[in-house]
Image (cartoon, rainbow, N blue to C red):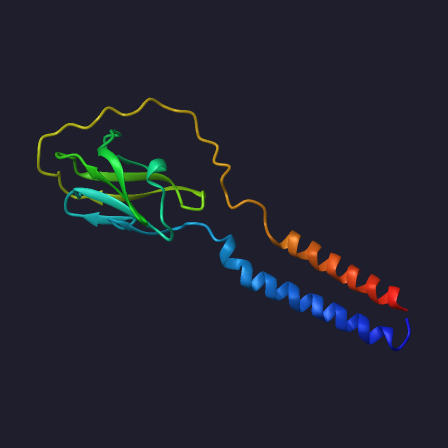
Length: 179
């Protein structure tokens, strides 16, 4: 490599590295997905009585047509009352009157505006029965586990590394071709 080609090659490699880092830093938010940012009641909270409603708040707007939320009581029965309600970033469902004291698990599955599926659960404990005399819905039949292939997909770093290699090789080829 001549003394003139070496600085050009280094300059091209440095420019490629700067472009790659800049592209990665500015494109990060485009890869983000909806995430659970809060619940009511809070996860692992102790409340005096079962609340009238439970809710989950997400970092993005959720699609109403794909929202699901169940409330499983200490007796294993469904205590959710009606269909979940979606209000922008919040999904909520009522709890039937007469819910017993004990540990509750709230399960949710929702789709954000960008199509990313978010699911999970949280629990809370009620120290006393809720007022009323309603009975719980019977527990659903056991269903096979759902294969959640929605994950966050492939890691990004292999694509960034491959891009850096391609850019560096392209810069080296262009510099050598000019000689």
